[in-house]
Amino acid sequence: MKRIILFLVAFSFTFSLLSQKIVEVTLQETLTKEELSSLLVIFPVKFGVEAYKVLYETMDTNGTIDTASGLMVLPLQEVVDQAFPFIAYQHGSVSSRYLVPSTQGVFERNLVYYLAGQGYYATAADYLGLGESRRIIHPYIHSASEASAGIDLVKAAKAFTEEQELPNSGQLFVTGYSQGGHASMAIHRVLNDTPIDGLEMTAGSHMSGIYNVSGELTQGIVSAMETQSPSLIVWIMVAYQSVYGNLYNDLSDIFNPPYIADIQGFIDGSVTRGELNDLLIAKLVENHEASIPKFLFTENFVNALENNPDSPIQVAMRDNDLFNWVPKSPMRMMYCLADELVAFTNSTFTDSVMNAAGAADVLAINVNSTANHGNCIIPATSETVEFFEQFVERTLVLSTQNIDPKLQFSLSPNPATDFITLNFNKIQNNLTPLEIRLINMNGQTVKSLAINNLENYRLPLNDMPSGLYLMQVQTEKGFWTEKIIIRSGR
Image (cartoon, rainbow, N blue to C red; front, side, top):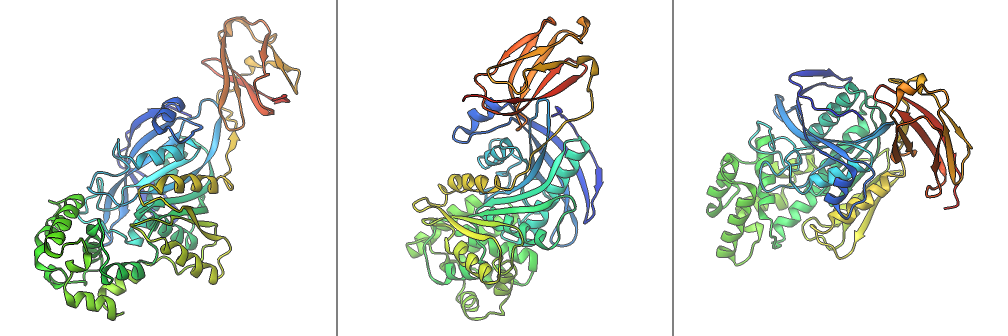
């Protein structure tokens, strides 16, 4: 793969579905396979990665164009290009504006690195109202804007990789965790009906997300359950007000007086979501001896939420439900039975509804019965990758660029067992030094060495598993490649 350090300003690409503009692409970090393995520790990887921050245009909920930010991570290839699939990861709820994937050091960014290190062109949108977006309020748990921000970043990544002549398989996988589970399912639903030209919606795996928004949120408020995340419910309310504009005329219409000043600070951007959460918990405990979100709201609002299906909040929540459609491509919902933040019933209920409606390949999977919301992310991600790998195509693309006939060599024996001899009789002396690479069908270099003379070279193979390989001889100006079959006793 090419080493790319680019700064693109107002560089436009036109797509079949929408006009898409990349504003800026900046290389943030390059990690070798060894460095990435050291960073991720528990996750095995096959490739090193290059990580880019992408600024791109996408539609705001009011119909205007905003410049959103996101992360694009590409697997490093050494010699042989592979046609990688795309994978769109959607991140979970954040406690402040810049704790998003495009910011280096954020934990969830490592999951995107892991996916790219498995051999995917990986993206992770920051969403509207987070990262570099001009919007103040992020439209939290708003399916349409989550989908458009994520899809537009995939389009930008597709255009970027094609401009760099990096081949893709035409496949697209979608996943996300927590809020990202809702966002990734929103993307899946949109692409279910409106595919992107050249990006087949291959499969989706949505992890610990809220899909039955109207049912779960209503129950969470009216049932007087205690939670350590009351700010998330407030976030949904002010977000839906920013999108639909009819939940309230004044904050006092739905919120009780002790909490209004803090909520207004969050709306203005002077209080982060994490700070708001701490403030709300402290005041709820002071006033009611427990962090119960129901006490944030006026009695009239709670009554309307519980009893009036035509109330603005009920209509808004139903607009963002994601259980009532039928996926055409395979879909999994990964959850943990002990999740205290997002009830596992979101997944099992959605599974039941979709299968009853005739879904061909939809399944909710309990990946860990004892893990809470924070601890569920690792097993859910591992299960997701295992699920996706059933469908992945990563064909090798042997580029015709820089093929040098002067480097033509022969191999014997072929098939080989314990060794193979490289015959350099046709290569001229002035072409040394040479580099020899043995490449497996994953595009990985499994042996590499430099040769400074043109004596025939005997390469040991007794440590190599059986299979089809590429033997490549390379100089600074070009290369020549031959196929080899290894039949090993390993």
